[in-house]
Amino acid sequence: MRSRTVQPARRFETVLIANRGEIAVRIQRACRELGLATVTVCSEADRDAAYGKASDMSLCIGPSSAAKSYLNQDALLLAARLSEAGAVHPGYGFLSENAAFAAAVEEAGLVFIGPEPSSIATMGDKISAKSAMMAAGVPCVPGPDKELPNDPAVIDQIAAQIGYPVIVKAAGGGGGRGMRVVPNADALQETVALTREEARKAFGSSSLYMEKFLQRPRHVEIQVLCDNHGNAVWLGHRDCSMQRRHQKVAEEAPAPGIPRQTIAPVGAACVEACRQIGYRGAGTFEFLYENGAFYFIEMNTRLQVEHPVTEMTSGFDIVQAQIKVAQGEVLEISQDEVECEGHSIECRINAEDPVSFMPSAGIITALDLPSGPGIRVDTHIHAGYKVSPHYDSLIAKLIVHGATRAEAMAKMRDVLARIRLDGISTNIPLLRALFEDDAFIRGETDIHYLEQWLKQRSAA
Image 1 (tube, rainbow, N blue to C red):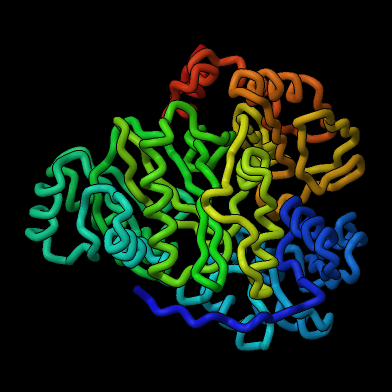
Image 2: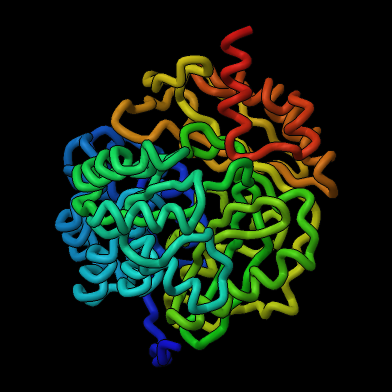
């Protein structure tokens, strides 16, 4: 186990939000409720964003291109110095899981609101992450926790030991890139060569590893929170199986149909793994779940887009917890006190055509967002807002909570029916149809279901 040195309290009064859009608004709200000032940064495309005007200071850090603004580490650090911020919150995406950026923030004398750079580096490499999880007793997908060698004969042997089909993955991959399924031995060597080249171009490393390919799994996540004093808890679980091209469309908590006695030991193993690697802050363990068994695939060392469904069921503010832990505070909740109640569902509203999925930019001419008990909307948009073509298409998240899954599903159908968003194309029509699907309503889906459902719709 890694020895833990209790960090002294590092108080700060101002947080620089190194992100944009709805997550910038979410962090801004958490800071305001904690009495902290906020500094937002913006590219030229986001210069007129309303959340920038609502912050204590807003600084333009570069052109519209993310590479020259939100991914520009020097510009972000300069903005922190000019604004005299004491801490940096990276949100999700962009630099949130960049160990070098986290280290640069700390070296500049600022607090990085997230894990230590060493934890980000360990869990960012899929091979070292799997090795750490196996050592902590977290169940993993069958396959060695070592880099795939170059020797074709040894590669053949490893695949045969695992058993076909197998999946070849980039060690530094993510977002669904750098992975290919191999159905049989005849396709193995060509697939390995193609994936090595893709990994080299996309991630700067041709390092690969190999695992068993599971046929019909679900995607289940476990949310953890850890402080600097050796305390760690898991806040229930989420199902994120509704995906298209490895991008999530809808999420829910808890994952339906998984008994408490099945998942509790896995949650405890995740907490123990966090203690062993000296993890701090919020994190998410991602698993494939098939035939009653869990298989670790990766850990996200940041806040997740779908964190609201866990907040709605646990009643715990994860973003505020991140900030408090970064200031050296002890977690306010113990595992015995974690009580997840009811059911929560989140839909991602994307600025894209609901059939072709092509991004849709333009001005939102009208916006009417539903409200009521058990309804939450996380967004940065408003009537008159100009959706930029330069960034991710996510523009809002609809979250509902009900006493039961059936109640939450009914509430989401009502919310989707009532929302009005004019001026651009969105995936709202697709979501309305999805929440009328019988298999989804019954909770009988897996990670392949949505793509198959979309194929059937396009063929009809």
